[in-house]
Length: 635
Image (cartoon, rainbow, N blue to C red; front, side, top):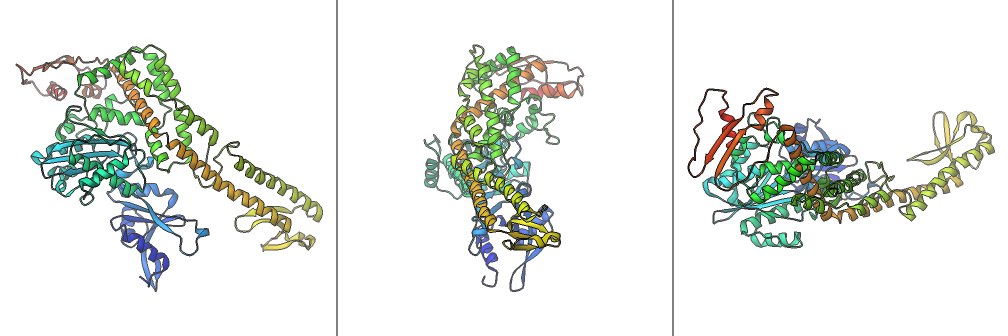
């Protein structure tokens, strides 16, 4: 290694720890890739492959991307199933003594993305962890790190893991980690084959003992979640461990675990989900033509994700179904309130994913302002639900769960300017009057700039050089500029600083003193604003549980309003739920086929099935008579 330059030696040291990732190595304003990483990236990202001298005449293949626009390139690599390790400069290059200290701050994989630019706001982005044991049981954990959602269950490994495939189909994970036994389960490779070869399948990432899992789970949650089986707990522990390793973060947004069984959600196998076209069509995978397409009138990204979850996880409890129906019926009857709620919902940003970035310390000031604008909608929405006496339990619960979060609104209003810059390292984002030290420093800078104008006028008067001007640049600082035609009038007290083609630049002792004062204050302002912003962001992050609870209530309300609007627009009625094994449909209409007819008449159909006496229905008739619409509806 001694034959390489110090910088390349540092690169190899970092790369040694991340052999399975493409290393984005920060050099100034670029992320650079070298050797095999550069060859892969240049091909996948269509970048020009160049080279860099790496010592003693050796040349390393190299390509790079600007750091401020790296998200798009990372997203493209991740979508193709690659992992990307982000190696940042851990100190200011101007203050470094020798090689700038660098280190990997995060590993981005398909299942660990939190950036909006890399995510589909209408879908959850699940990482799946699969842990099989020697007794034929399999634990599954699904985590969306961008929202903090966690679901855990236990399946049988019979029939090649058919139940496992069913659950993978329910959550559609983009990345799967599995232990050695699970790797051999046919369902995992079958899922990848059926969905996409680009799904990242890590066969060696879940070598995890039960004791390790217990320790990891206990360290993550204040109260240990009730996970009844060892494989399920191992799957949860392994997923959390994997996320901590890749995110280099404490995962503070992951607070609750939902352990579910067949008693809560209907289990639909992979083929049934595909044939029913619940969220995408069977022919081309498009949303148009699916049940989701019909039902989605939601106004928020959170509502869209929850609606998809409702469709993919059908309830089987009549009591819970009835609670939803009653809430929708009330919203159908109270159209004016429903429309006002829907109007307010259009101004709500993605609270769940905003809070994830805030709690991970990656959110900027603009995102805090977006959160503020969202939170100002909560009070009016809560007020609308209070405006009438509501007896429906689900709506009462939603109203109770909506926290107006007025303290967070006030904090952001007091601390962050209405239109902050994108960068949090360059200042100009903290309000006047929020911090005394910041205010006093700003007065120094403001006074210094006024004093500069005064000095300029005095020097013009003193020297008789009316075109004399005071300027500034980052390299030379403040200077007095005099054109060549007036050089003879320059006083002896002026110190030459720079010679240009048509002018000379000078400095004076007075200007040097002012420069030190103003630039010192400006530098401190920038650092202080960043420190203040981080405190504000951390304070908001501390209220994560309140925001998550409110976000869940808003999402549910958005979906219920969507159901109500669709019901009114399409003249749908609420089905009566019985547990006697009879399906009795009168004048049934297939929701998707009816819409696809685009106004053409749809002939309603009756259907009757009785598990006691009429277990099957033989449906006959000519082509295009509507047989398939009855079959699909009865699935």
